[in-house]
Length: 171
Image 1 (cartoon, rainbow, N blue to C red):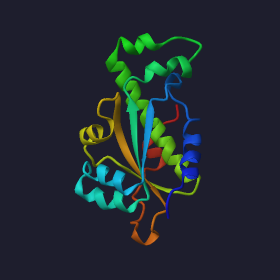
Image 2 (cartoon, helix red, strand yellow):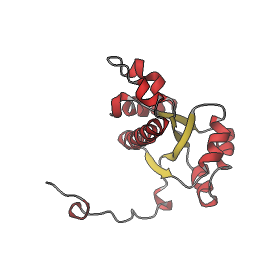
Image 3 (cartoon, helix red, strand yellow):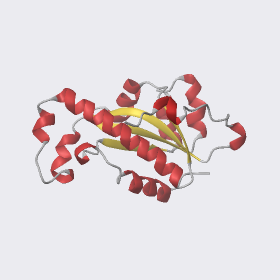
Image 4 (cartoon, rainbow, N blue to C red):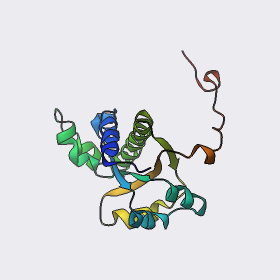
């Protein structure tokens, strides 16, 4: 079952409401669902992930803009904070990665909220994705996410998770 344009827009409308540091919104999303797009993306995947991506109706490249700060006058209009990022590329990169990861998490929750299944993937070459999809830009790939309606018969059971007291302290 395909993921429709309407579903993609609904997911993004949820994602864009999620918090990011200084409303920086560094994530950029490439929604890959055509055979041509999947063929381009498959070249970057580790072999076990190729059939997972091929079987998903949609794979999203969750990327970040290394120069996201150029958009701060629009996104953080009450105070010009561009200089703190322009003068410190390492800080800008950390901020872009951290906040695009948050936005990727929001994407996964948004997909679930509208009834879709998700599978995040990091088994790929970021350099290959960046060359194939983002050459000559300030965009870099963070991770991939397959989205669709899963075949329940092909899924393995959910793996264990920590209990609250194993990983949480309330002080």
